[in-house]
Length: 141
Image (cartoon, rainbow, N blue to C red; front, side, top):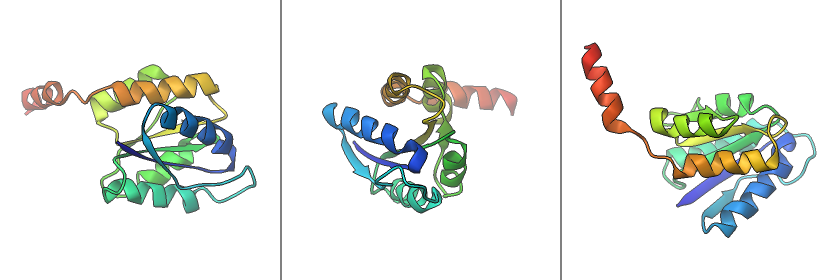
């Protein structure tokens, strides 16, 4: 599985932690920057990572910022992207199970490194519950 990852300056340190964790776990990680904690405009890094997921160059993606809100909004402007802002394991699990999120956004100022790793691992290990949601939609029609 190929994972795109990108951050702004506020998410830089956590991005590096997650890259090390994911690489150690055997994932192929494509880093779209930024490369330091010097202030940058987050869309310059988030958009290329997002486009790489949308066009199939990467299977999924993770974006990081201070709160993660702007990064999620920027990602969701790209057709075919379902980016969920995750703040704990449950939000990560539901992002995959209920929304089939192909990207997640994490606020580096909102969670600890350990919690961020748990969020990513939970999201990666969860599965979309397709049949359950199709049946629910059919009942509404």
